[in-house]
Image: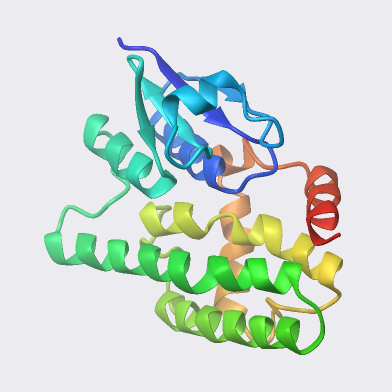
Length: 214
């Protein structure tokens, strides 16, 4: 079997998606922590374009960008599929993953890095996007239905990072009353055994986000 390695960073949300997928499928891998402040030769060699984590090395060949890596893992190791088999449902899953990437991540960064009215506006935009995800999730255990799937892994960092972000900026974002389905999903997601096996330490996240805001 070809060797699997993952370059990641403990405070970055995106490598966790990949680790969760590997753990879900029972794939043995070696995790290599990367210092994002002093990007070493390994990261620059295998991801010279973006110089970011995660990078999956499979048999020495690099695959970059977390969503691309998730699809690669799903196509390479067929057991316990992440994406639906039905083409229409698979297209829907890709759409919601892209929606979450485009509509949530940039506003989360703006909310962290800004102050005053700009920050308030970013939080409102984020909540508007979360409301759409709330409606999509309504009546389901997970985005994939009864078990964790592709979209769940893509947005799975929300229940880990959002409470810490709220603490740092002093604003409530994912209120349980306003987002009951997302809130319940987050609690359910974090209790899934292979998710629970690999979660970021809250104190490290708090220190990291506080430093980023400064």
